[in-house]
Image (cartoon, helix red, strand yellow):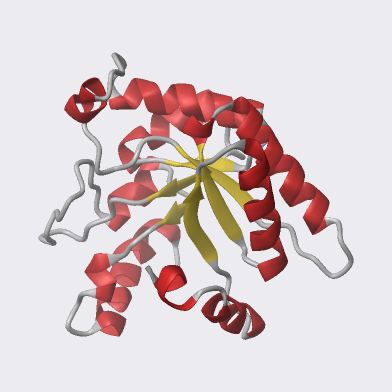
Amino acid sequence: ELFVRAGPEPVRWMVERGFRVFLDLKFHDIPNTVASACAAATRLGVAMLNVHASGGRAMLLAAREAVDRTAAEPGRGKPLLIAVTVLTSLSDADLHEMGLTATAAQHVVRLAQLTKDCGLDGVVCSAHEAATLRAACGEHFRLVTPGIRPAGAAKDDQARIVTPAAAIRLGADFLVVGRPITQAPDPLAALAAINASIAGVTGAAT
């Protein structure tokens, strides 16, 4: 939403001030278009960006090559390149309605294995699938988990949710937390509470 409203300038502003930015634009298009978008994102200096795994092998390989090539330019950093598996707003029934016979969990594993085979750094997935993906894809494969809701928070439009501490225990590397912070009366207090809830799991608030 911010990127559509204001374009890349807020990203540049944050990067210049030392913030590590996850550019969550979920690129999904023909390979050439996605490659160009990934190159542009890499030049912005983001720490992580993502594409949709359902874009297929050719698109994933094009994204990987574009990030690697651009990151090799003088003065560039190399962001993590992550693929979205199944959106956490989608249930098994939603996938069946779209013509997929696999469950959400089965489809996530299939897309994660494709993502790893194409050399990407990890996937976006529900924390419910984290343990399975860790076993299937290894310890160094990054798991980025949205659908994070503190205990007692509204579910909103998410179908597969987990608390912050539970997500860490299940093996998540990064937590994506949106509305529980951005729509809270006091966003900084909401963030502090989430950090406190995971401090006992990670050993320190992150």
